[in-house]
Length: 148
Length: 371
Image (cartoon, rainbow over the protein chains, first blue to last red):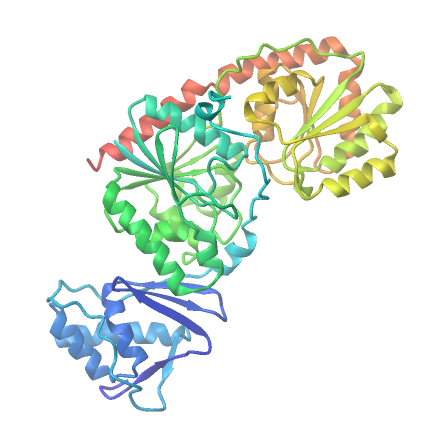
């Protein structure tokens, strides 16, 4: 990976959304769910926009209190993780468009960008027994019964 | 102290956990805790913001957001929970989750961080051995974990021995019944099944046992209280076994009417296939001095003491179940003695105030540390 390397989201397999600065990603093929912290959320539009690594390091250094060397190292780990999870892949084309800016307006304390994985969500959803909804449940609160 | 009480289903849903939650919340409020409920409406059309006897209830469609695999829906639910946590500023989050919605606790727990108490009331299913699983993360993130039976905790520790130092058993409990037990009727014995009509409850096994029991005690009949998807299969089996009108379906029974229902029974049967975490019906039966004949599964042997308050039989073995029922019906004085012992043990081991006191101590210790 060098400063010109670009990635793209594996859109056939992945659904993602940034809201309130944090990113939620689902790998539809594996059923794994991912949530990113605020710094990962700020980077996500650049990843989606196939921005080069250099642009992502620049974003980190301009919006957070972090040195370029540290930012590049942390970014490398994040991108490696995302690629290993098949969420992103090396891009074959250039930037798709100007990325939406999800970075904070004011300079922020830095946390390494991380994605937390929840590996068994599909399994849990399959296990979870939806309670049989029993229609008109013959149970009311004491205060309701008092009006009978 | 402010407590966010997070549970998969809550009133007006019905079931052992839901009934316990309503009673527990009333009692804990009386002890000075400020409680807010966070739950899911399930498939029902229920208000997003509600109140149960003055206790705020917030309902969010966790399962729908997760099962739709729509990140926007998940992010939207996360935003609502984050806002609730900010507004409430709880000192303690008391989770009862073993379902996928625990995911939302994990992704919002950094908002207004506070202690987490995780109470387990079912045998855990799912991936406990992998650190990246939702349940493993929930267990790791909890300051303290309670299990409602030794069976649940033992099962958990087999997977995650590292939680031994921050976990304990707090058995389920019930308030004393207002209704005194009535004498057991052996002239026309009644066997009671109470619970959801699903295959795991094993009610079909009890029907097969009934067809053996009536060879010795022809006046025996059975009440099935509850409802669920297995009812048509049970009705077919009744026809197949020629049990006819010996079996009466009562449908769902209001929680407060359960003691009276149990008083109609001579014996209470719990033939579960699945590993019941506790078996609240067995405790309700004991309160009414009814012997319980139960499968030797999960936490049931902690509630039904074999030969002292009831009889245990091997899972799936309807012939052994039938023999146990016949033994009790053959010997009314023994059955009465078992029922009385069960009633005494219910008060000694599963008293409601003792149960509450243990949670009060945990709430104060966990919540107070962060105040």
